[in-house]
Amino acid sequence: MEYVIYALMLVLLVYVVYRNYVLIKAYRSNKEYIGCYQALLKGEQDIHERIDSYIEAQKSEEGKNKGRLLKLYCELKEDKDYAENLEKLDLNSIFYSNGKISKTKLNFNSDVFVWLFLCLGIARKNSKFDVLNKLAEKIDGLNMDSRLEINEARAIYNALSENDISGVDFLNDILEGNYIDYEYDKNLIGLYKRFAACTLAYSGEPIEDYFREDIRGFASTLVGQSYMKNLEIYEKYPPVVLENAEENKG
Image (cartoon, rainbow, N blue to C red):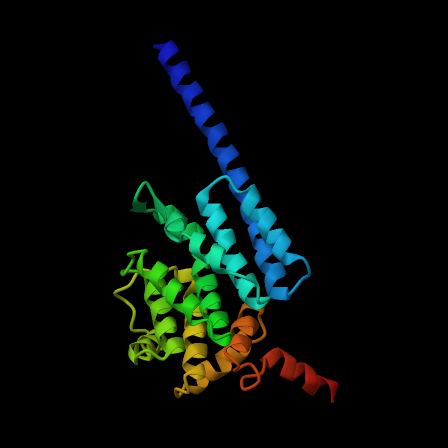
């Protein structure tokens, strides 16, 4: 009986060591990923090379494709050739495991949706409708209709492409809180609402005073500033922080 207990303890120990090893590797990889996207939003030099190095260092397709999405934004921002990278981009590998949606991956990679929104925005700025359409195909290919993020990505695509009013309607639903039937990362719902409000502002839709002020707060963040500048609404909704700073100088 003692041998059985020792064997079970040994198996448990091996599992804990392995699990810690996996978590440490994931933490180090994600730390560099965060460093890459912060540097990209700040417009730091040699970011293209840094993202390439990140992609090359990744052992999993999940990691490589998270990097490819950053690379796509970088290519569009710097007016580089994006065709090969866009073709390689596989969103399914970021959210699926063994052919099924992974809740673990969804929770860990929910920020990827933010980069999808950003890529749609900069593609519209540069009139890269081929990129808009290709991203829309890849978004549809995820088959995650129960997720708020996927439906918001489609709505942003439709609004920026001016395909139909369904995009505007869904974005208004987000601001009005009509999304109880969808699953989503509750930690990011405020961010999703800001993207919705910004896209509606770009579309010339009326926005309540609360959200008008809220996106001015969004403009003071790296993500908000990037998205709003790409939609050319940054000057219309100047950052609250910057405005207060100017007032304080007087």
